[in-house]
Amino acid sequence: MAIIVFVGSMLLFIVVKTEFFPQADESRISSTIELQTGTRVDQTLLTANKIDSLIKAKYPEVKIISTTAGTDDQGGFASIFNAGGTHTIRYSLRLVPIDERKKSVFEITEEMRADFAKYPEIINFTLSTSDNMGSFGGSAVDVEIYGYNIAETNIVAEELAAKIRKIQGAKDVTISRAKSKPELQIIFDQNKMITNGLNTAMVSTAVKNRVDGYTATKLRQFGDEYDVVVRFKKDARSTLTDIENIGITNPMGQIIRLGEIAKIKEYWAPPTIDHKRKERIVKVSFTPYKRSLTDIQTDVQKAIDETVKPSGVMVQISGAIKDQMDSFKDIAFLILVSLILVYLVMASQFESLKMPFIIMFSIPFAFSGVAIALFLTNTSLSVISGIGAVMLIGIVVKNAIVLVDFINLMRERGNELYEAIAISGRSRLRPVLMTSATTILGMLPLAISKGSGSELWSPMGIAVIGGLVFSTIVTLVIVPVVYAIFAKRGERNKNLAVYSEFDFMNGDNGNNGHSN
Image (cartoon, rainbow, N blue to C red):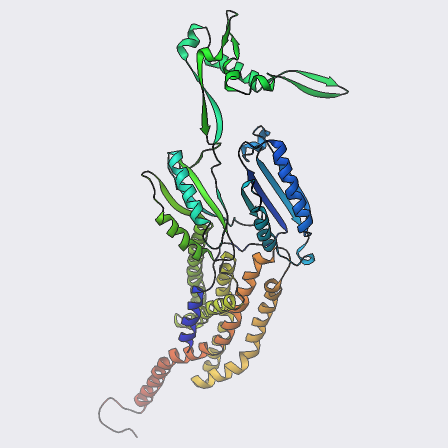
């Protein structure tokens, strides 16, 4: 019966959802909204105002709204890490505490996704329930596309993104490489520049100063300083002809038009080119929602297999799915090492190789309790609940140690095997239940907590409580049975040795004589 229960409970892991780290309700939402590339700042601000009004009217749970709209590429040091633009809107929303609202942050985020999708001017948007500063890892799943050719990898990324958007449970599908931006590319003719006494540094500096401007002086007024930037007026630097007519003064004092020494052409270039392992990479990322990573991985892999990949392009799954697989392998290795260490410690204390093996029969049923608890509470198997399973290895053996040690003591005092087991079961029942109850009650607040961030640690409490409850029940039944099975052979050998010694003392030398 124990074997059937164990095998049946292990099958529950097939239906239990899996995830890397549980998503916690941190009462905050961050969002990035992209309009059509090249949208003017005033139009971006109008859209931002409409969204602000929507959030204030429909979502009373939002306490603070921080909006950044229409940032340009000259945003200083911060622009290195955040590719902005006049078409970008960023939100940081702070919600009221979880006990003051009826909806979770995940439900509010899902409603916002539906509302944002109704705006035709919004090309793409993402919504995140965490800034990943207070959590151990991101929940996004990445599909990495490697390849040198930018056009080919962009096509593969767009095709995969379209397929992933149709997968159930995949939200906020984004492509890491932003859409190409229009540029004017200036190609210098070195021979013409040399003929006119110019070089690349002189020409490029002159063009930059006239288009972007340079700080000529500082204006000091009422204790404040202001930079005075000098550059061409906007109507003198807004067209291709205007750029070609920019005049550069050579060392001889002559003014040379830029169009006479260079070719200017329109060019579409990606804002950034990411690299990984010295290869160009573009990522298709999405956030899982109400579906296990294992199921999503199967559908994503199917989409990858169905996508035609040009020569030199490689696609693989990364992000939370890969982190989850690596973490589960590490946890399995930890469990193996823990089992070995527990066995060695008990073997040295009992001075026996058989007694630790009997005691460790309670450990597999702790994992059965974990599976049953996760299934009944609809909790996902994650790294946190896996850590709880590792903790159980050291916790559950203590009850079996108390029981087996007392059985050995009763047998040393001359009790027969079954009688020693019965006496130990009656005598050690109260200590076993007390030690289990204290640990279970200690973990109970962790398991049933509903405060902010409780989703992160609650699976550990559920796993420990489930494993300990089931293991305690099994320890009181299975461990004595296993002890009796292993001890019977030793009991027969002991009786046989006593009988032989009795025959020897009565003069039986192995012949067919009779003793007195």
